[in-house]
Image (cartoon, rainbow, N blue to C red):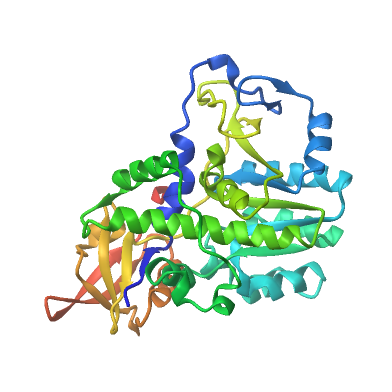
Length: 387
């Protein structure tokens, strides 16, 4: 049975970021001022009134670009404001799979320090982005005993759901998550544009796999939010903004699950040279941020789409301009070993890549047309890394 994976989560992460970059508007004066809440159509909002309205919602979704510290500072600001009004709150995290829930519970209970929590949750294998981006929020939850909920699943399970389908995965193995609602035509179009920008080669089915993978991701998170909403008066979800914009992605799946009392909030570049005026339907409210901080280094990426191959993992597609392309890896290659260790499933390779220091070489043994050979994947230094 074939399973496809982005390594590590290349296309889904690109979707989170690229969907935001595609949002264009028409009026420069519709951008929020720094520190200002704004309806996307240009209406200024009173922050006190907005917080009171949001505190009465069932689910509030806070979008982010994962590597932007100011986005996470803004999320903490909103979480604190909402908690003051509705202390019966849970914080739902895209960053961790369901298997990490015991570690989150132990963290909130004060049973783990930072190092022990990161190890117990397998943070860097599950997510990869620097934990320092999220630790202030995690400490807020610990200080106030706010439950933290893991609403993602492992990349291995997402791959099974994409390739085999829901019916082929027992309900208990998929945490009771149901199959996703179909994507709207607008969402499909956006995902098709992202796919066309970042993928070359492939077998012609890459776009449909990419859309299916994005829908799986959206549904998984929506299912986790629905479950959390049954345990708290207010659930605040921290999720990549590409999954939230325009009511697509997670909001669309929540409505299908019967959860429609939902608000989506996004950070937005404040009025100035970097601001793109927001479309009227991008979210319920925007918050103006001066984007002076540089993105933190993203996790290492090979830039390939993988499939299980019995022995090793097969390369199905190679991202243009990626580390894999520079190393000479081709679609059809089978990766057998990484840094001398046998690769039996995509997760083995993902772990090796995420442990790779910037600016170093990762030796890979591949099989191409029946013959084994070694290639060297050179990872760029921090300042050259990207998504």
